[in-house]
Length: 286
Ligand SMILES: Nc1ncnc2c1ncn2[C@@H]1O[C@H](COP(=O)(O)OP(=O)(O)OP(=O)(O)O)[C@@H](O)[C@H]1O
Ligand SMILES: [Mg+2]
Image: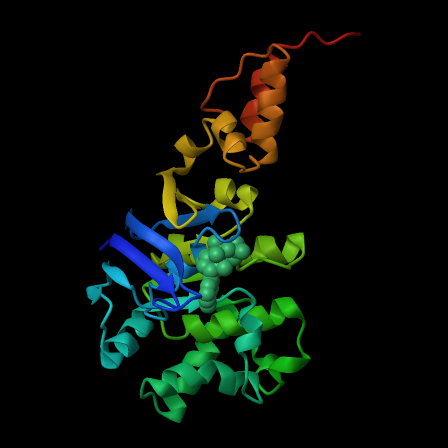
């Protein structure tokens, strides 16, 4: 079931002098079992939008259909709790959400909150650790003695352990080194490809969008500016630059080559094919 968003509005501090319309009537249909990127300039409403998907924020007008839940301005707490089992939201810098004294307790918190016994929760914790690339030696350690990247894995494990159908990630690779970011993106790709999770990803990284995502949504000042499948999205780099999006390096290289007289078809979006294409057009000097 896709995620349907109808005329969604969110105004912070509505009715006060500090009122701010962060979403101004968003309509979207987000495909299921795909990886969708949500991009856009800072302050465009990305985080506000995704926080509606698990009921962390409720619409001030409009509605959403997510995993069979109808999310509207007056959603009952009981339904929000059920929704949170289906839609896992990982904040930017999720490591700040860790609070238990051991990693095992931290990851087990969600399942226990949903009624799992000690034994069932412990079983789930043991199963989830390898999925986030950690082993059992971590379980008795304090989450606060780990590196930033390891803490983030624990926080993500705490969400995945509930086996949500939809995984929403707000800038999950921010602040990680390139290798850590790559491992994190590979984890999300595997969850999507192998376990059919629907993944929504807020990001500023166009390389990640191009390499790992299927669909792209561009937010601008509380509205949807553009929506496209990823292959179509990068076909018009001039437009991307015009709206302030820095295209991935391969696209920038392709543009330079075209400016310098090379003939490169639109469909070429990876290094191998680009190399093959230009090899046929260069005269190698002996
Ligand atoms: N709790 C809040 N109270 C009042 N205004 C808020 C609140 N959170 C966000 N805003 C405002 O709503 C707008 C959208 O913010 P949001 O955090 O959704 O943007 P964003 O696209 O996620 O930006 P970034 O890329 O910087 O994370 C901004 O103008 C922001 O200042
Ligand atoms: Mg944000």
